[in-house]
Amino acid sequence: MKLHQKCISTDFRRRNQTLCYRVVLAETPHSPDSPDASEISGNEILLRWKLPKIDGNSPIICYNVQYKESDAVDWIDVASNIDHEFYLVRNLKPNTSYQFRLASRNKIGWSEKGIPTMAIKTLDEGAPKIQLSRAMRHLQDIVESGQEVVLEESKPHLDYRVEKSPIHWSHEQPTDKYNYISEISRGRFSVVVKGIDKSSDEVIVAKLMEYRPDTEVQVDAEFEALRSLRHERITSLIEAYKPSNNTVAVLIQEKLQGVDVLTYLSSRHEYTEQTVANIITQILDGLQYLHWRGYCHLDLQPDNVVMASVRSVEVKLVDFGAAQKVSKIGTVVKSLGHPEYTAPEVLSEESAYPQTDIWSVGVLTYVLLSGVSPFRGANSDETRQNTNFVRFRFEHLFKELTQEATRFIMLVFKRHPHKRPTAEECHEHRWLLPTEFMIKRRDRAVFLGNRLKDFCEEYHAEKQKEMTKYESLTSAVRSMGPNVTRSNSIQEEILAVF
Image (cartoon, rainbow, N blue to C red; front, top):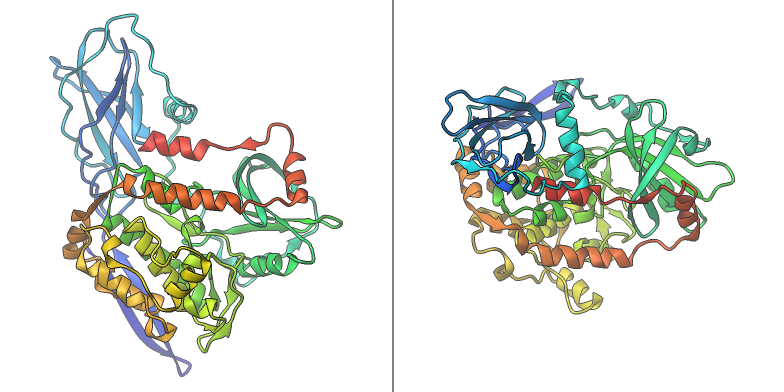
């Protein structure tokens, strides 16, 4: 089970073209560990478990739960369509001992059955029922209804036609086609809400942006960047609305899980260096495509790297409000991103290059492997100086870190962008190599999720202060109806999983 990367050079009409691809050899996943009984009542037991340590290079799709009375021989299937890491087993006998075991499934097939639990005894009849959170109850109901798990092949594929036929502004009212349900988040110039397509019931995300003389250039730039991009690591734009006689523009995008990478990792009991390397590899995949299309993101920070699911490590790049066209010979760009994640050449108003984004990748890597912002100073001027002189400390990095991770950070933190690796060259670095030797080394470096919690809370408290106060956006959210509220479903689902 290995991951290979190959390059083929061909001569096509007297032009050299290089094709890069990776081949993943997948297999069935390893068996999950025994589940834990987190709560017990007279006739119910709430089981929780963790993802298998090895998923066979293919995301886990669902689980099978079986149980039997401790002195019985035959196992009984409870469900085989559980797509989360908990399950409430009902209708058990009071004051009776049971055992439980799990199997996991990926695209290739089912794992072997896991090791059974020790005997778990239900309480006496009449004991209080187990109470599930709203998100957990919703997921439990879906499984009990018998709904089949959708395999990857059945999911809609990316529509690459937009690369040649980009999306255009529509001047209709977006509310004619979409119902808005809840507010997800706010940025400096925008509000993000969850919505539903009235005709198909498809869940979408709508980004509402103030469209005034002082913001229209930035709004148009974000639309221009997204309208023809299609990649599995970049959020997909579905439609764009700029109604006549209205100061609010709306970008309709695919619905992601919505939780940022920092919240995801800090919510886990523990995570490994392998998980971080996987995330960074996926970010580089998105940047490689973006740079090939002539753009730089220029605002890579935790909020803009979003999980496509809380169950498997799959990320996408979002928020292209700072994205600009950047050539390989250099382009002077405006500094619109978070100063702690911005490259020194942008802060100094020098030319930016594709490697400008690689600096931000380094900052993000450092943060996820330390819980510290590498260049943060006592004030904005000191932060700028630390960035310009590449002043950061190695001792903040977790002690369990591999040498290869430290060397990767040293490689990308170069003052001059031409001395930094490109996205393609980052993939070739030893730290990110998908060899069995390196995977095992990265898997052995384990970090507790609470090491990131303080930084995560501080980061989001700062983002809270930046929330838009534009009255037109506030009015637009209010006009969606009295049932539009702030959504907590993401946080609840994270708690349900972890």
